Image (cartoon, rainbow, N blue to C red; front, side):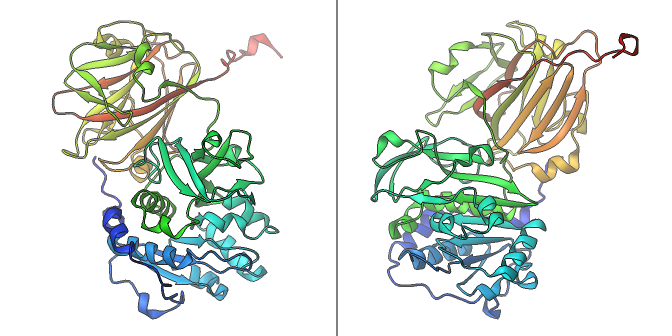
Length: 469
């Protein structure tokens, strides 16, 4: 059941080489009109991206370097790039050619009403949006644009170093970055906080620089699904130097990959979760290894399985109604690693107690439907069509949300609901139990990170007809 659904759309991630090539960029890149036939695809099924950089206000001198950088990312990553400052490119017919549109430090009112309608229709049909830096300083009177960008620019202090805190380690735009990312840029303050509407990928530590005005909660990169389309915004990218910086290029490429649909991610807003494992040694104090094998804590804050069959389980307490989120990744070496997430089992240092008394949400690329990734192991297959479309391949991060309410369990993979299961076994109960992650065998390498939980209100038992109203 191993999925290869996007093999013709998989972008390479050789951003370091691209950065070396871009280090010598000093002059403007030629802006190719969107309708130019010179950009016709010579890669079968390759994605196509339009870079739009029209300005009606302040013009960033980094725009040429940004266009050149995205072209280089396309050359190394297997996607085509057109670049234009001509708003006439925004017609329904022309926009249908593109998997994503990058608003590269646009400013002011750049589209007329007909062009705005064309862009809205493009997004409604499933198109992708990437906003870079001053894309938030654009189209203040167009409500749709403000929604897809996520927030509007308010002000900025002087260019200076700051610490970017990576909040989501699974999204392709942030999965390769350190948790505390030190870099220099022009740090925007925004008129509103997008956290309630979008999924925040990274934020600024306002104590690390001067001039932040967002009261300690300062998102700087986020993603969302928006009215049928996919959207990614990063406030980074003011300076020319950004476009020769490998980490920033990796960040930008990941955002483009998400926007074109090449990589999947959970971009629903997230709030109210508390960490059970946050990548630190201290956060492992509430966990215990049951059975053979172990998990190794990496310098990048990941837990990686080895040996087995055993289980690392959270001993501090059991849970009733909750949403459990965690990120997981197969090693990518064999492509067929095996692990899982156990829920609803009683406390025990025997890992087979979890098998016999709880439920396992499976991670395994190749097995029968009721024992493969997304299944409630041995009981119910995932919706395999939806699972395959949502699944990232071995070597890339995925996010599970396991939501338990009473005897009802629902599972989301990268924001897509793929399983809906109700326990009817009187010997088992989802309503009160522990959680754990499995280490399956000697050759299985699965990594986990950012295990967090949000407890939910317990649902009252359904009324029977005899209880009346």
